[in-house]
Amino acid sequence: MIKLIAVNGSPRKQWNTARLLEKTVEGAKSAGMDAKLVHIYDYEFKGCISCFACKRVGGVSEGRCAMRDSLTPLLDEIRVADALVFGSPLYFMTETGEMRSFMERACFPYVRYSNPPTSSFPRRIRTAFVYTMNMGEELAGHMGAAAHFQKTKFFMEMVFGPCETQICYDTLQYDDYTAHGNVWFDGSAKKRRHEEVFPKDMEQAFELGRRMALPLAETV
Image 1 (cartoon, rainbow, N blue to C red):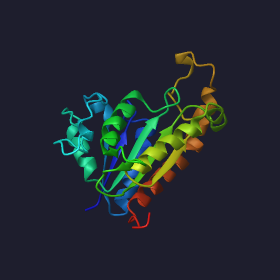
Image 2: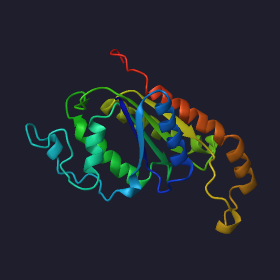
Image 3: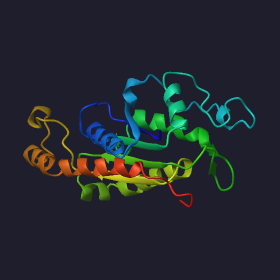
Image 4: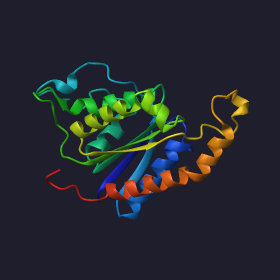
């Protein structure tokens, strides 16, 4: 059975990013796809250590991460997956530190230093990246978020296959804004948006999961 793996790069398992990925998994299952969600903060691992064993031609770890830790079984599952969805909140205009370290381990081993660079991943598969952030779309634009999204999309497509991006702006960070001294954002407005807009984001995540179950054309 074809399989989707969704990876939550948020430290919170029941908040915005995780809930969206749960919907993505639900959407994939509704289309008959085997799918599961994993939380990267459950794993004990480090990012790439630049040993380059994955690049040694003919080496035992060519095209695979040579490090062995709790992340290794997940990387093995990704190697045989039929679709991948990564999700992360935006911290300092990039994915969380754990998600970046995970991406180093999950993506870099497949990058061949050919000219132009190519991928040694066994086949082309559907991928997606789901982002959440507490800032609105206009501010994110001023901060250069679009360029970062495009860069990540480029690497996902280079390594694995075509990548969709779902971006959820102006999300609710926590229930009580006054308790955290947060006067920059209007807590009441945040809650209203969460009630009115976030359900639509959830619907989009569900449909994203359904699309992940579609066959990938040979020409893509």
